[in-house]
Length: 328
Image (cartoon, rainbow, N blue to C red; front, top):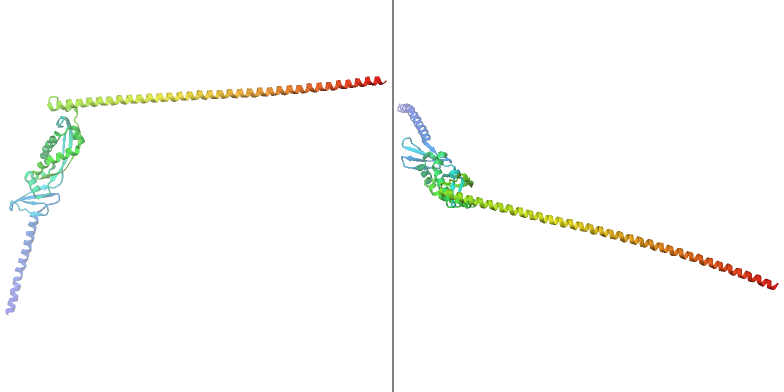
C-alpha cells in the first residue's frame, strides 16, 4: 500500500515539475531575448562609447550591453573622411612674397583607431563623426588657417616647386589640432594650385598692392624676356637665312664657274680636235702633192729616158746609114 501511495505521489508532482521546467526555459528565452535586444555590437566602420552606469567604456571590437535609461551610447564613424578645401579669387592664400595663389586641397582624416582617440572624438564631436558635412564645417576653418600660415612662410615659386614640402608642413601643423578631437590625418593632396588672376588683387590692400606691383614687374620682365627671346630667335633665323642664302649663292657661283670651265674645256678640246683634223688634212694633202710631184717626176724622167733612147737609136741608125754609104 505504501509503495502504491508513493507512486501516486510522484505522479501527482509531475505536472508541477513540468511547469517549473517550462517556466525556466521561458525565463531563459526571455532573458536571452532581452540580452539580444540590449546587446550592441561595434562594426569595422562604426565604434561606440558607452557612458552611464559603470563609467565610460570604448567599444571598438566586439560589443556591450546597453541598458535603457542607465546607459547612453555615442556612435563613432571609423571611415576615412575626405574634406575638400578650396580658396580662390578674393579668398586666395597670400604667400611670403605677397602674391595670391588659388589653392585646392583634399584632407583625408579619420578617428584615431584606439580607445583614447575614439573617446576624444565622442567627447568633442559627438555624433557629428557620422555626418561628413558637419565635420567639414567644424574642421575647415582650422585647415584654412593652417594653409594660410604655411603659405605665408613660402614664396609662390617655392610653393610651386616644393609642393611636397608645402604639404608636409601643412600635415605637421594640422596634426596637433586634429589630435585634440581624437582625429588623425592620413594624407593631404594638393589638387589645385595657380596664381590668382590680377583682377582679384585689391589695390587698397597693402599686401595686395605690394603683390600686384611685384606681379606687374614679373609680368613685364617676363614679357621683355619673351620679346628678347623672340627678337633673338628672329635675328638667329635671319642670320641662318642669310648664311643659307650666301651658301646658296656660293653654290650657284661654283656651279656657274664649273659650267663655264667645262664649256671652255669643251671648246678648247673642240679647237684642238679641229686643229688636229686640219693638220691631218694638210698633211694628207701634202703627202698627196708630194706623191703627185714624185709621179710627175717619174713620168718626166721616163719620157726623157725614152726620148734619149729614141735619139740614141736615131743616131745609131744614122751612123749605120752613113757607114753603109761610106762602104759603098
